[in-house]
Length: 60
Image (cartoon, rainbow, N blue to C red):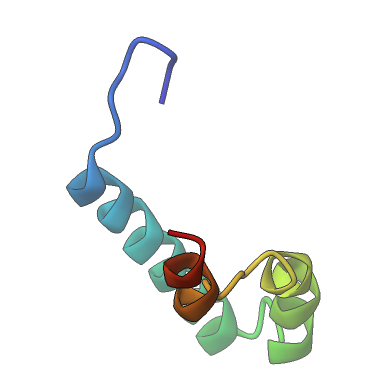
């Protein structure tokens, strides 16, 4: 996505599904193991943030 483009949630969902499909194919063929995929995506797991709606509401 370039700076001139807008965010397209349907296109992003399709990209994510394509990535999942590639991972499934790599697992099925033995090209990658579950541990390899965990290592690849493990860094992203730390970026997940759960919003604290109680605190957000209390700041109003």
